[in-house]
Image 1 (cartoon, rainbow, N blue to C red):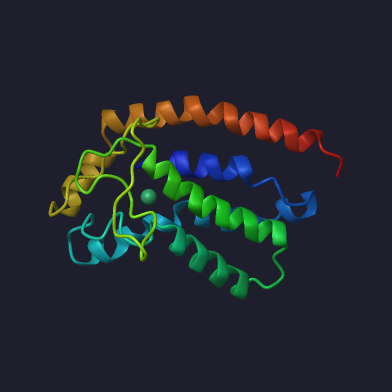
Image 2: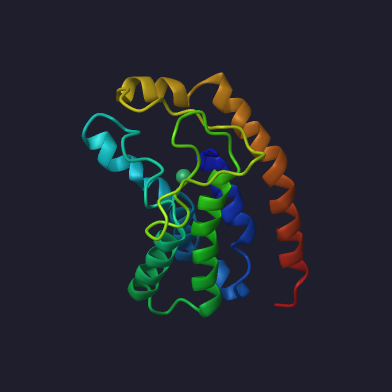
Length: 180
Ligand SMILES: [Zn+2]
């Protein structure tokens, strides 16, 4: 998986698609960041049982989960525009697809993209991002935290900044050039 920094950078890069008055609100900023990291909330049940990686890269990393998440958010926040709902879906699905583009050192490799129709795990043949290390399955929270704050992960974040930073800059430039 890319780091949370990478996921949020991608989300910010496409968050400016709706109308300007819909973009510059605190609620939109919170929803964008939440959608960017939502698939990784599958760490939470594992944290509760002392094995953070136990349920990671499960069904929350699928197209179906992106759909369910988007519908739920659209039902809760009924005045979201169609463009906003579409961007929320794209951010969530973008997270899942970005995970298929990151190196994965532990089986099963990749994500169950087509769950529940297909239980296979998918990962790109050539990965673009480095892996964000967060311990192996069955290790405790201490080891996971030790891994998260490693030099390796600093390098992972640097690669993401190098790839997604220019993407964010370009989309922001495009957004500003659009008539409001
Ligand atoms: Zn993920």
